[in-house]
Amino acid sequence: MNDTVDLLFWQLADSAFPTGSFAHSGGLEAAWQSGEVDDAPALARFARGVIEQAGGSVLPLLNAAHRAPERFEELDQLANLFLVNPVANRASRVQGRALAATIARVWPGDAVSGIAARVEAGIGHQGPVMGAMFAALHVPLDVTRHVCLYAAARGVLAAAVRLGIVGSYESQRLQHDLGPAIGEIAARARETDEHDLAQTAPVLDVLQAAHDRLYSRLFQS
Image (tube, rainbow, N blue to C red):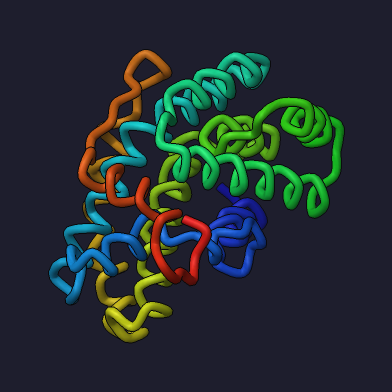
């Protein structure tokens, strides 16, 4: 692994990389307004649930698309069928398509452009898009899994700061504390594919589905 490749990984994981994730709370806003998440310990449990859910519902499709990008359309359709929660489905599509468009603009090339065109013609769910696009950038699958889970945790914790649940320092401490869980979940998902899709956090899913019914909201999901 050379320094240039290392910097590519950091850039893809950077919160400044424009994929629109700042507009989503991963269901946290609904959980906060319902009183389910009102302090740092509750937030830590919620964030753990989010990355567990990503491990069961995003990583299997990400793995499959990274291993066989030519199957993107099939896996994208499967993601659409699996995500029956309309809020989660919409968030996955919005962020997946934004990720594809950003990568196509930053690193234009035949492989990337080919995937981008297929995303544009398809649905564009986050898991298949990230798997296929990171494969086109020659990012190893293990790194891709870690970036996915890290970004899921970071998105929730960044939303927590904006909602006033915790401050910036506490958010960063929680992000650090989730490191072992991210490694554990990524390792557990190493051999998974689309046949292993699972809903691991049903309460989180119910809370997120209520997002559109909130009287006032900062986030899209």
